Image (tube, rainbow, N blue to C red):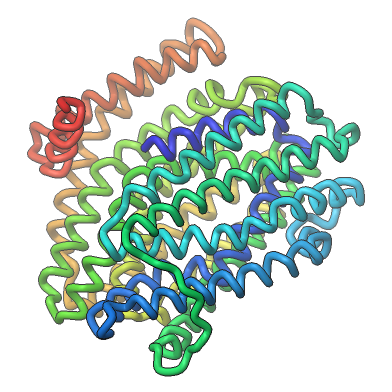
Amino acid sequence: MVSRLTGFLRTAVLAAAIGTFALGDAYNAAYQIPFILFDLLIGGVLSSVIVPMIVRAKKRDADGGQAFEQRLMTLAIVVLALIAAVGVLLARPIMELYTASNWSSHKIDVASTLARYILPQIAFFGIGAMAGAILNTRDRFAAPMWAPVLNNLVVIGVAAAYLAVGSSDIEHVTDQDLTLLGVGTTAGIVVQSIVLVIALHRAGFRFRPRLGLRDTGLGETGRTAVWTFAYVGITQFGFWVTTKLATGAGERAPGAGNSSYSYAFQLFQLPYGIIAVSVITAMLPRMSRYVADGEFDAARTEFGSGVRLVSSVIVPAGLLLMVLGPAVTTLIFSWGNMTAANALYIGNVLQVFGLALVPFSIFQLLLRVFYSFGDTKTPALIAGVNVAINATLSLIAYFTLPARYIVIGLAFAFTLTYVIGSGIAWLLASRRIRGLGGRSVASGLSRMYVAAIPAAVVALAVLWLTREITPITALSSAVILAAGGGFGLLLYLLAAHRMRVTEVSSIIGLVTSRVGR
């Protein structure tokens, strides 16, 4: 939670420093490239292949999988360092690939310069992500959850410094401004990786470079990873389509382009990151062990428990985002070089993303069912269907909607895609594991929605009453969130507790026990 909330603050300070116009679009386009390349090369493999493989190596190998882990770490460092170097050399062609054709040469130059400073993150991503995966298989979850906090704090400091000394006008930005932004962003990832490596050492892992791949099981990993690379490639193609369309929309309607989409998406992922990622991180190693031992009943129980626990937070969060999205973004983004109108627009995009929160989270949980079996082919095929739907709907939105509504249309295309995709994934996963306890999950979800609807109504009433008295400003937004969001959440907790939603009761018990300490 601390990690995601500091990420929340990081996004707000960055937006205040660089805005959502040309410089903001250039920065966000450059910032996304390391994530794209990392996902293409190893990120997807970590969650779908590496963790289950490490679990099996620990059970299979005489040394408890230590040599296997060392070879994985060596391979990741070597490959990603080379890719980072090549990426820096090819920064401009990469940026031209991901940005709209109507961008000016100067805007692409700025984005390319930022990309050269930011692309070295790929190597540090790899080191940190591999360290986090090995820690997860040892049931050490604290460091991977806390390390991003330091990253966020570093970037918050950099963004605050830029707000004080830098320019938000892309025509007046200097080389020193771009160096501060780019190097500062990369410094956060470097700090995060160092923390994870230290934690891994304390957990008993000793790194020794190992390049030999014969009789290590990495050949099996590579064969399994082929479909994961296909999955990531397919999803990144979909992301490329969205980015091209969003950057094009920003040129046609300044302030309603890629930055607005990116900031809204980051806020949309806040509740998902706090609860769903935490549950997924703990769930995958356990499900992999159950499947490896043939304990399908235990695996089904683990999955059902994970879905209900995630949904107990995601359901009310999604409804509240649909109602309070503009208040959230006005409070966060109406500062510095941001305008109130642009902050409100991000909130409108966020409202649409709120519809996607539940299906997106359940879809990510469903993928872990396949990954626990070592099945990476089925997720890749599902991804192909998702991308076809999303790209088609996004193109329709781009060519039919007024320029200012294109990004909102892209968010709606994302929502419909995951509604359909989660239904397909559920049917296929249920066949694979011989049932997913659908009735129990549906019963829990229905009770959560019944408990959450009054909370949304209360939040909507507070929003309406406040807007009758005063326009939406940062101050009125704070009041709306405190009253509408606070009372709404309290009402949900009380209603869910009375309706015997056990997951909510367990969360309340966990929080009160931690506070009591």
